[in-house]
Image (cartoon, rainbow, N blue to C red; front, side, top):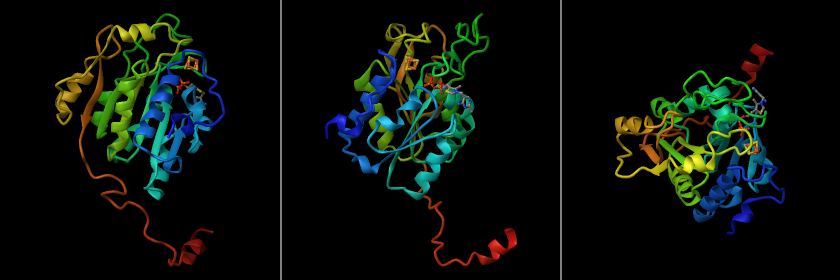
Length: 279
Ligand SMILES: Cc1ncc(C[n+]2csc(CCOP(=O)(O)OP(=O)(O)O)c2C)c(N)n1
Ligand code: SF4
């Protein structure tokens, strides 16, 4: 169906030129090519510029607290295994407030797609430094330059047990669309970290800056974990070339499909002793 059918009539409030627009288009194109109907889609968004989009999509959506998009997504996937569960997060929420959830969702190999709009800033709150801000970058909260090296989301996810780890760029939509499609088709926890220029609060990592540095992984064995670590380490926020693509993928038992982690049918269970004990 046309990609506009994945959107409501509400117009995005993002700034003109924001990288989020491209991500939204690439996602809708991926859903369209995979022919996933609206009623089979459940999207969770976090708090942030990226998070604001929950009411702009024609599908089931839930706007979570900041850094807490994964817990409700995990719960929903447990009880609705037939739905495609998408989670859209800013990097601040994903790699700051919500890091613990990322680690455990990856470790448990929860079958969902975690798309992180990585603009290296807390943008909705006007541009403070996040864990992915480049060392030395001047932001509202680091006027003399960020003093620590950034977190590497890819190595963090691989080390935590994620079974699909990829990096895309909001300035290369055909490639990003293919990554999103692969993440949706993957059975297990899929992280897609997306370089998303914030044209207002990040004057360091602009579209032009990325375009000069990104390149696509080729001849890379995605099943080789050590090699994946090595390639993911090529960029740690420095002024270097930045690889894009699927870094790591493996098949491991996942929730609902290979392991029945859902509750037994409790319709006929007598819970009155429990009620007596606790109330
Ligand atoms: C637990 C918590 N901490 C902080 C905030 C304040 N807050 C709201 S939006 C936001 C910035 C969001 O940044 P990010 O997650 O990177 O998303 P972006 O806006 O860049 O898309 C912050 C810090 C909050 N709402 N809740
Ligand atoms: S502040 Fe940045 S991330 Fe937020 S809508 Fe504007 S350009 Fe996009």
